[in-house]
Image 1: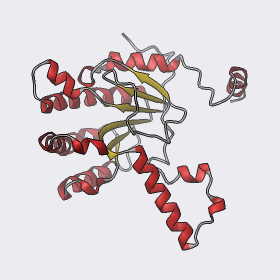
Image 2 (image 1 turned 90 degrees about the horizontal axis):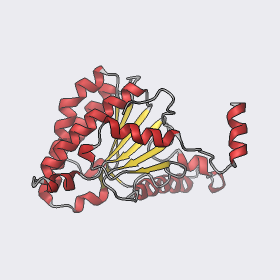
Image 3 (image 1 turned 60 degrees about the vertical axis):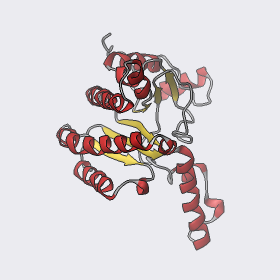
Length: 249
């Protein structure tokens, strides 16, 4: 399936990458091998999004709840992440990809945090795709840390409670300087957002596919983008109002 030039692409695409373990189980492999195959899918999708001119790609790689998995699997995931940072960062930089990592990084090893910092600093001024990796992230945590910051400012007398608006609150969340997600893809047949961008997904189009993440390729992405291009995003308006806004724009 080829991508049509008539497709309207999202500015910000978010993906919950799910199904590595099931992919491996179906093939009688270890879950670790499934995660390694998942990394290959990441490379394909990052490359394709860059080619399509998508502005932001956010990948939900490791949730706060994932710490509950067997220790061996968690350690393997951490090692895979660290190795990927080191092996992929040069190519990402050459392709003008700006890498960001969001989440509560305090539980990661000092060496992994250092690798994240180096990758961030190296790609900070790149002008191409903004690639966001969400690790030890949860939407609830994101909201709570914003609330805590606001409470601190109110207590310090630098912010009045009456000044706290929806727009102001949003500036304290992760990725507040980037456009909100237009399209969320979740692979593997699960129909939930699993504590991902709880605030940011308020008006996001949701696309669920049975495809397991290691099998999610360019054709699978094109199908999701075609689905998105057919959606009428009204943001609470009627279809007639939405049409008038588009004409005025």
